[in-house]
Image (cartoon, rainbow, N blue to C red):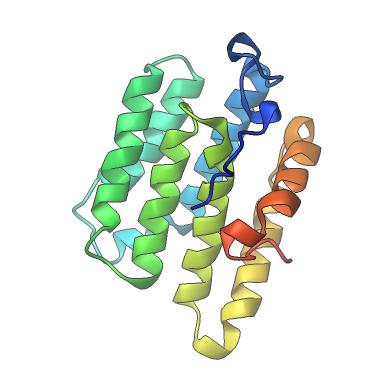
Length: 171
């Protein structure tokens, strides 16, 4: 489980009683899509004909642009997770990262799921003796792409949820 038992109001939009602005929600979705897309080749190498993970990433970005509704982005995220079910290793984690990115439109806190699964994918793709280093490198790559407007929020979220996210944010 990558979501906390109690929802952090910083990841709930203002109109739903939280403190998250729509602008920051969109930035979280874009960052999650970027994280997922970075490891997407690990899925596509195994299932080049399966468009579901790439579709989830595209839907996340389309939601940010106002081209699709939240329900469409969320559904695309679910389809990407379905693509992962019978896989193992890096390809599975990459598909889950894409699914989490698609779900950010619905629940902003899925942003960390996209990042965590991308790090797991990078670890799984590396030789066993380089897995931890590959994970740290991926984590730093993601942090380098954090928009300044949401940087403190995401870094604090990583600190708070690191334990339930397989401790992948120790980078």
